[in-house]
Image (cartoon, rainbow, N blue to C red):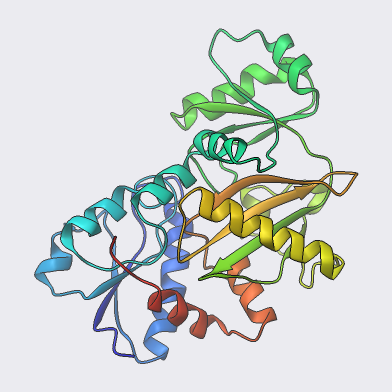
Length: 303
């Protein structure tokens, strides 16, 4: 397939710029190895109208976080009429917002942990009573576990709120903690790839353990019985589509002690680094990284 001139959008201005550059560099190298006329394009350093001026035929979005994963860049590409990878404007915007994703899932009967939006004048003891300890506090519109705190005592809540709301200039969300194994389900087109079970050091799957250490263990096959894995795959597709997502993405899931699933969030522009999970799941079904990048690019569209 002749893709024409392809822009790999990477970098950007979000807190995840560093990871985006890593993802984009990997994608760029992969596409070029397959003979694609691919070029790096950093929206933080270039005018988006250059995409039209320089006759780019489509875009591979390797941007993460705000500005790249929240419908903003997708809307600009819609205006320019350039096909792009991943979810459209609405799916990207909802998917980036954990609060609104939860509202959509709750309305559709999809299980997600109980939560509460925090304010500066919060009654912290009331939050702890309502959601029980331990609980999670995180920004509603950041990815890669940035600004996330596991709170084990009510007195830790103000600092966790400050980190999520003030440092990341975001809505802070307190969430019920699910004590159990974590899984991630990758979506490629209309298919859910094999689930991956994540085993992080001391259960702490934070920014460092996601991208910069080799201490986190990933199990694919996940170890789940086939029937249970298929149930989770079906739930993943339902949740993905309910938010309005398309193309490719990832849904993060926890199982509690009774094996009940709880969906945490959807990622509409997942990482494509050496530690990333979508490439890992693709390899499990015989899709090398380079071919995965091509398949994602084939799904690019406008509207």
